[in-house]
Amino acid sequence: MLTGRRYRLDLTPGQAEFAERIGGACRSVWNTTLEQRRIYRRRGAFIGYHDQARQLVEAKGEFGWLAEVPGHCLQQTLIDLDQACTRHSTWKVRWKSRVRNAPSFRFPEGGKITLERLNRRWARAKLPKLGWVRLRLTRPLGGKIKNATVGRDGRHWYVSFLVEDGLAPPERHANPGSAVGIDRGVVKVVTRSDGIFHHRVFARDREVEHAKKLQRDFARTAKGSARRKKAAGRVADLAGRIGRRRQDFAAKTAHALAAGFELVVFEALATKNMTAGVEPRPDPERPGAFLPNGAAAKSGLNRSILDKGWHRIDLATRGRARYTGTYVITVNPAYTSQRCSVCTVVDGKSRESQAVFRCTSCGHTEHADVNAAKNILTAGRAEFAQPRPGVRAGARRPRNRVGRKANRPATAAQATAQTEPELAGIPRL
Figure 1 (tube, rainbow, N blue to C red):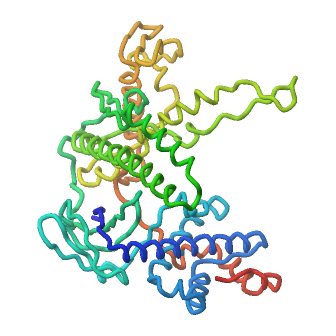
Figure 2: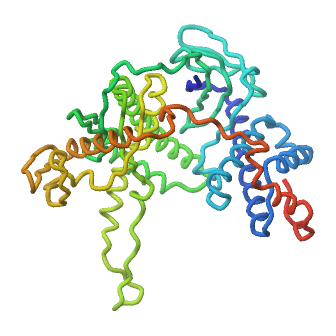
Figure 3: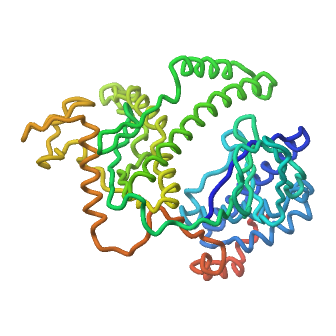
């Protein structure tokens, strides 16, 4: 099956500069083609991947900075944009900023990528137009390379190989019939229905204070100065160190869940909605003034939720479930923290505090997160027992490739775009 391998690159100054130019060209192509799609949509027409790919070939003949970039990287940018617009609509796809979006590009042809081992710790890979690049060999590749993605994280460059490892999912889990419910929280990151907690502090108190100081130092620098670049690098280094701890915790927790249970049940949490800001409350008696709305407390809760990496744990478990035969499902999270796991009575007063649950009906007392995890498991067992088309939740979804099927709904609109005379003023690539 397909899996990923990520390694840190050791680029020369010339290679790093060229990689920045490739990422900048891909970002420019993304923004230009996205604006072109929006202009077409405003006038009731459509332009798809194939037309934009033909225009990209013409643009490479006019602009030298596009011609020096590997053409496959630009084509992959168009494919990613087409898939994003198909999945989320043209108006919901975001622009790519030079400041907020780190440069990243993909080489789709794995047959043109060569990997050679130099010694126990280092290897080198030959990438189109970048040449031979050194990488830190932290783990064996373990399969055939399908494609490679190069991106910058902070001040360091990384390469991610998509590898076909030749493994097949097992027909049955090692512990058939085992199941666990997972409650994700802020005080304890993961609480299992069997009473076991998985928790880790990703940013210590001194690191939080140090991050605030680095942010203040960054805010005092002038835009475009060398000091600002160094200050941004220090902020990125600390954020990257905390992010790697979060990623390591998610991988280890996912391994424990997938290896130990055949059924893993999560709550279908809408993290984006849960971390949304609070709307202001205008004061009707004082025009231009606002009433207290608890925005400060809500922002602190939002930071705590995002710090725990709830979605990353879900994704890591689904990825690991492919190798163990584990089923990963989600259930409705409504009233899981207010329902008694023994008598099933729902009462908000039973949740006495963050950690104490005492049922007002039967008197059952338990840790509140463990009680919620048991309710999640009960709901998951009921949903899993219902007859439905059998698709393993941990299996990889087929990639929505650009082609006739993806562009079939837009055929009529595309024909209109090619014959409409009022579209002559739309900019081309």
